[in-house]
Image 1 (cartoon, helix red, strand yellow):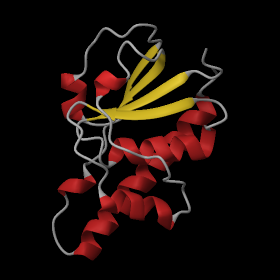
Image 2 (tube, rainbow, N blue to C red; image 1 turned 120 degrees about the vertical axis):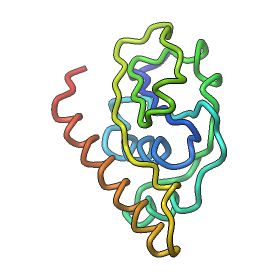
Image 3 (tube, rainbow, N blue to C red; image 1 turned 90 degrees about the vertical axis):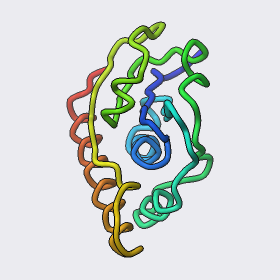
Image 4 (cartoon, one colour; image 1 turned 30 degrees about the vertical axis):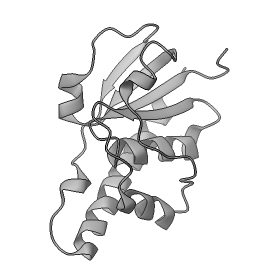
Length: 143
């Protein structure tokens, strides 16, 4: 039995945005939610995701890329937050026990081009956008 409502972040690759959202939500509200992330086509956690999180001392231990099927029908997801347009279109509409489905689209930092410095800057920018959205949402969420 889950002690806290399950919150799942969903993206396509489960490599950057959803991983950052999972780690950041755990950091800010891990005591309120059982937080997970998954992808419709997981491809491994991007190394710059981990670097951007470590820059802010956000715990990354245990982060791994997971397929949506690992959760669908196996974990009672209360809140689903989709963080990319592609996953929003590919995601099943019917989820057992789902109470809320939110769409928070963020630019894909893994698609950034340029130098390693420029790419890391994009990961940090998206990380900060995700964190701001989470912090604002937590102020309003009244589970």
